[in-house]
Structure formats: structure tokens, C-alpha cells
Image (cartoon, rainbow, N blue to C red; front, side, top):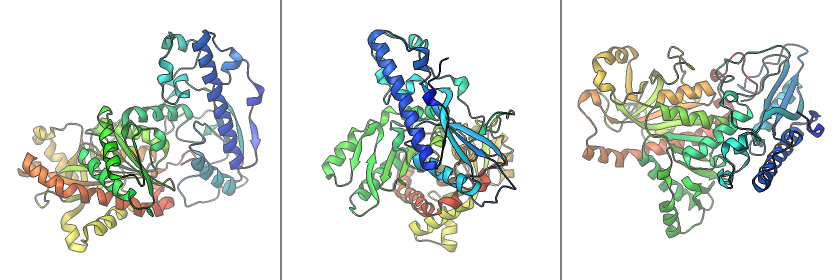
Length: 492
């Protein structure tokens, strides 16, 4: 295929120059393919081979030539495991600018790495070059016809081999620089829009995941109140469907916007409270079950969030627990089975000290209780995560495993979310609220359940939000070395 020589690899002097070059190349590739598509829609004329050679992702390469033993660094990321060339394709570099600069500045400063930027061999699939996707619905050209002339999403080219440690290194090939390449990132960015009803750019780096819509109602009430504070850090709330509430709006206008959000159209609606410094909070109602939990975290992970926390309901397994008590998970008995191939159940999922301490401190701050009083309401222990909501019907088979694990609570998402955080190097934690006690005759009956929800949801959500406030000041230590392997890609 003919190649435009202006797209060849070039050495750059600084990380800033590298990112600007990535932005230039990405914008040029997107614009070239959009123009070719528009021309094809209008005239039926396919792009020439030379034109198609421009429809490719930019590539970032780092060359680390170790003259001695690599320096020892305490941080968990932006480290080379050894000398060599490291590379990755990049999408949306303007959005990821701060992330890219953070990684590159460390690697250049501490290791003396040199940088090259050019155009890769990886083509940009044509559905990813338009913002909404409905631009492709006009005209008489079918998807199969477009695929004859334009790059298509090929699942064989999208995978998690790097994250899962199954990639195979070949001599004379670059080592992976990041966990996800451009095609994998673009795939997930579009999936986020589909499942959450939000522009992926709205997702914030501090994420709460819940399994019940009442947490959404409480989050919206709290967020709207925060937006009334003219001196507060929050600037806008984005609801599913792109409905946006700005700081300073009147109460009637706010209520109308909340009512207009089409959240019910989306499988896992997301709500984003934004801050001026870019360190806002996203709440996603993931629904019930490990499949949803894996699905959404597969896609959120490409945004490299600082943390995700599960704040949902669980069944208490101990007589000493009461409805409304909290469970701070320090271990998981994973009976969800959805990750058995990628992270087998015998692989331990460690608790992250920074998050455990933050959740406990947040519980003290919100409840006003500490010491023995807090211990009566907040218990640390193992959570069982099942893929079968009616696991109680197999109690005779399950009781031995539960006894051996010393589990104190049961749910359907927490173990999956923690295992995904471990697998995809995103700090994770779990704080659950006991909504029933299935082994002790306290089941969810409508009257008792409603009374519990009114009392417990608000406090529980506020503990999760308070924990994120604490963790914002601990970003460096939060990205724990417990999540990194011995042959880890340099980028976080």
C-alpha cells in the first residue's frame, strides 16, 4: 500500500512535543477519513490506496537504553522493567493529554528515554471517526459496502492480551507501552456511550458503582445541592442522554431537566458531577449481577480512573448483624465464575490499605461513631459473590464453602468488581449495606425494605463520597504496587 511520507516516525525532544504531534496526527487521520466517507456518500467514489493509508492511528515509541541497573522507584507506574523499545497506538490524545504527559515526564526524567512519534499500521475503524454514529445512517450504502472500502472494527484485533499477561514477546518487536492500544480504547469508548447514555468524555476519574436506583436519586439530590454553592468545587451535573444541570440554575429548571433525562433507555445509566479541576465523581447504576459488573468495568478501565468503589446492598450472613449495618470487604469468595479464565478463583485479590482506611475514616466522619460503637455497625470480612441470585436454594451445597471462607455477607457484584480492578490495574474497594439476612429469617418484605432504604441509602452514599474526598489527596500511593506484575507495561 502506498504511504504518505509525511507520516513517518520523527524524534521529538520533549513529552509536550510528543503529545502535540500525537494530537496532530490523530486529528489529521480522523479528518481524512471523514472527508473520504462524505465523498463516498455523495459520489460513490472509494478512497485511493494512498488516501486510505492516512486512516491510521498514531503510534508512540519510547527507547530506553539502560547503561546500568534501572533506578529503583517507589511509585507503582511509569517504570521500565528493562532496556528496549516500547510502543503503543494512541487514540483521542487531546482527551488523554494530562495522562500521557504524566507518564512520559516520569519516563524521560527518571530513565532518559527518547521518544518517537509516527503513524502505525493499525487502521482506525470507520464507525469511530464520527461523534454520534448516526452520521453513518444516511444514504443508500450498506455496512457491507462501506467495509469494502473503509477499515472496519475487527474483534480479532481487539483484546486484553496485555492486561491478562498472555501477549507473546518476539525479538525485534517493540514491547507494549500501555495496557490498551488505540483500537481497544476506541471500542470501549463507544460501548460506554451505548450502556451509560453518556458521552465518554463526561466520565470522571473517581467512580462509584451501585446496584440500586435509590442511590441514583440520592446522588442527584446531593449533587444539585452542591451546585447551589457558588464557592464549591462542582460546576455541572451531566445526566443520561446528555442532560446537563449547570451551577446557578433555578429550582424549577433543574426539576424539569431531571424529569427529562431518558435514563430508562440505558442498561447502566451514569451520572457525572464535574469539578473545575477535572477530579469529579461518576455514579453508575450497574444493575444486578457479575455480567454487568464485568461489562462496565471492562470499558471504564480504558479511561484509567483513579478508583472505583462498590456501594450497594448485600445479605448479612451473621446473627450479630442488623439491617442497615455496613460490610467493609477485605476478601472475596468469588463464586461469580465470569472471570475464572482471566483471574482464576485461586488467585487472591488483595485488599488495598489506602482504600480500606479511607472507607473506615469516611464512616467515622459521616456516622459520627468510632471505636466500639462503629464496630457494632461496620464489620470487616469476606464477601461471597454469586452468579445465581437464588443461591439460597442450594444452601446445603453452599454452606461448607461459606463456613470455610468465614464470609459475613453475600452479593452478586463486589467480587467481580474487585477482580476487575486487580486485573485491569484500577484501585478498588467495597462498602456494602446489609439489606436482609437470608439465613436468619429477615428477608426483604416491602414495608421493612422501604423503611430501611429511606434510612440507610443517604448515609451509605455519603460515606462513599467522603471516602473519595479522602483519596483525592492520595493519588500517588493509591495506585498500589500490589496491582502491578513483574513484566508490567510502563504506563499506568
